[in-house]
Length: 343
Image (cartoon, rainbow, N blue to C red; front, side):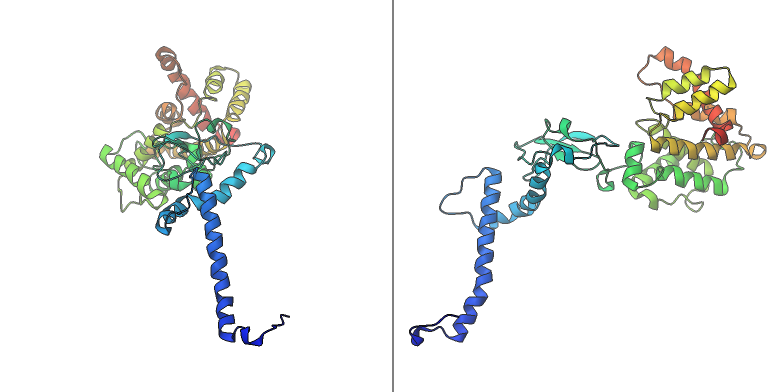
């Protein structure tokens, strides 16, 4: 309790209440001054006796200060705190940032007027170029950073959408099975290329909201064409480059038991999203062959179509790639006929 020696100097009730109301404002001003000092230090600015006005600080705070706490915390993590095992590497590209940016690995400022660092096109992670090689392979793709569905890496799209398979494969196969399994020449007859490109553009723009129903595209061959185009446009085919040689070797075997075992070993080399997509597609093609008396499409016919679509020789000469075509057909034919045994 405060005792005033001179009661006449004792503050009035009104002035006391004003002082109490001003205290939070003073504390807030001090906090903001401290924040500006921290931000100036991060930017390497030297503050004179006359500090910049509030209008100078506002855009910097909007762009930068909101990131400082998380970035400093991220940089303070020990190496053992990072995820030790990853599933996907980052897809870094040189990037020019607008406004001040900090490296999300070392938390240091990224200098320069152009191409200050690199940015992962799949998850949006920003780092120095030299820091990008130190970042763990823990990329978690975000749909906001994926500009198109076609030509997008299969695993990237699956992880971004949190689905088992690409939406294009699921939606097209459901539509084909609902109204096209008995269509003569299914997958062999091509739809109008303009319409197929239109479906592609719609998937790139609208994603899973794309309308491919009979009301939008009456010709089922347009939907089969869109599915084949998606599979051809994949940067890494469904049967990945790493697994390709093992599938070709398996197709060359003549012993039935050894061939099936070799196929199982080759399938185990596929990344999970690729294996799940291949399994779903082969089950669908098996159902297509079960309607052969209507659509006239057997396993051999489908294998001729889907062999080069699902497999591409990895960085080999033209002669080898040409010789592999027949084995590509044999691989897909075995996968269709033995679908119930292999998957």
